[in-house]
Image (cartoon, rainbow, N blue to C red; front, side, top):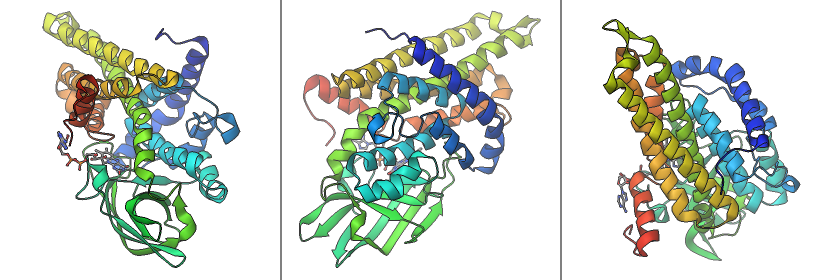
Length: 382
Ligand SMILES: Cc1cc2nc3c(=O)[nH]c(=O)nc-3n(C[C@H](O)[C@H](O)[C@H](O)COP(=O)(O)OP(=O)(O)OC[C@H]3O[C@@H](n4cnc5c(N)ncnc54)[C@H](O)[C@@H]3O)c2cc1C
């Protein structure tokens, strides 16, 4: 298996990079300060294949394979981790609707999402339910032609601005007694409570807590087979872990590039600081971590493409790359001296945002235990 990029991937990467440098980078500082997201970018991202691009062409996608997608995720992470996060959240809803939605759900929700015209979020986590998603408490009860939703969802990316939420809840109906199901809640028709949360990481991703108190949605808003949302959710996690890993690789590469430029130019004691051995050690340690993380991420992307040895490869990639990216960002702050703490300079943001990779899509500890389970065949998670 070669991890080198082929000509098509290089062309695509350059095209995406040009777009990000000219149309995204100039917006980042302003939106970071305001903690807002430039949603006007979404239709342009759709044209570039970022929304649903991995779906087959007969489902409206571009048939982009996992390694190529990984390259695209690295580019997003390099330029702005909040953007990578928002793209992935949108794709989470897109993939669920593409694979399980009814024709009417696809028409009303999937098509505008894939055009970047409909804001969406995905709600699993609750105040009392995080790593153990099987313990979800939110309820959906079928009453006549409506589902009645009660419960709360926490740390929901894009929850503040989403027009449509895909919510996982325990469903109770004549055919289901409390298994997990997925529901479309269209906030434009059936409003629910939204409380925006200010977080240390990924400040432009509209993180929110959502509250549902007797929220009534049409019976038709059930997505997929009732009671089977847990397995559908778990199935998507491997690919999501590679996405987050490759975004982390991109952010770490950005921190490294900024550091290399800085240590060559910054002078102390009459010499560039890059001429001091201890500063060089930081640069080398950063480089080794970036290259190792990229290799593991691409290896996992190839495993996904081949459909072989997926679970362990994806968890190793997520575990290593997210931890390594934050270590790299921390070293980047160190070699920048006081400048590294300044909000006017990107390494400060990269340091905060790379901290955001170790918790979602399964924490570092959960990834460790998944890998342990794969190696030993013994489950230490629950
Ligand atoms: C940036 C960001 C975006 C997010 N976006 C979304 C979103 O869009 N939708 C959504 O539904 N959720 C989202 N989440 C929530 C995320 O999925 C959860 O935070 C995550 O699953 C962990 O749950 P928790 O925060 O409740 O921590 P907990 O599960 O309470 O974990 C706390 C600590 O205990 C450890 N721990 C827990 N169980 C075990 C175990 N069995 N063995 C060892 N250690 C264990 C964890 O590793 C962690 O260190 C987001 C979170 C973040 C940080």
